Amino acid sequence: MDPAVVREYLLGLQDRIVAAFEQEDGTPFVRDAWVRGPQERLQGDGCSRVVENGQVLERGGCNFSHVKGPQLPPSATQHRPELAGCPFEAMGVSLVFHPRNPHVPTVHMNVRMLAAHKPDGEVVAWFGGGMDLTPYYGVEDDARHFHRSCRDALAPFGHDKHPRYKQWCDDYFFLKHRNEARGVGGIFFDDVSELGFEGGFALIRSVGDAFTGAYLPILQGRRDTPYGERERDFQSYRRGRYVEFNLVWDRGTLFGLQSGGRTESILMSMPPVVTWRYDWHPEPGTPEARLYTDFLPPRDWV
Image (cartoon, rainbow, N blue to C red; front, side, top):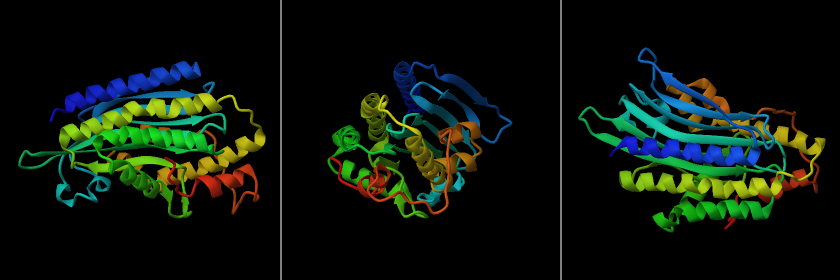
């Protein structure tokens, strides 16, 4: 097991994704590199690549981080209690893009490795990741393309992986307090160790490499769709669900905050403009209502 190889891949993945979306948007991403010193709770380094008020992306960020800490936080040991108290290192690339046009979905992608160092010297590593799509005005062809891209990324690892990880995504990105899905899903996997180090690393490489092809054609096809104040208003309302999920249910957010991670990078996923309303429901038969009836209920999109 060589974490340096994983780090090299993740840094290259961040560079490739940022380059592709800088070209599409026409706006350079700000580069914010950081280092944690020995006096801090976590040691390590990372780089946040962020765009705000771009031509296409109203707010977007693609983070790399590699941190080490003295003790795994509770969110990382709930399925592995035997590793409680172990020193750890974690590295990954995580991104969220919030487009300006309400007809372009928000997207999230993450690939990561977590390793615990046991007292006997054994290193236990596992992998996680996935990607998911959150439309405001859904398009069936877009959802199918995204899910097929996810299926194809998992195909080399067995035909059971896509059904399992698709269902895992539907279950995970679900707002229990609303009894409502966050979006149309995608794939999600966590604590994957059964493939071994090489197999787990190959898995996150396949998912990371598939992201641009899964999302960029959707953005390109919808970025110039006309919209007005009504669509922007609904977009800001639905973005509230994104905030609720990330702050209440997301394990990655909890892991970062509980382990003393960098707050600006952790909360980079938040949308720039959000609204809430009391007990609001869309009028039946409207495009807004169709999101709830035709897209948020889980479907077999492939």
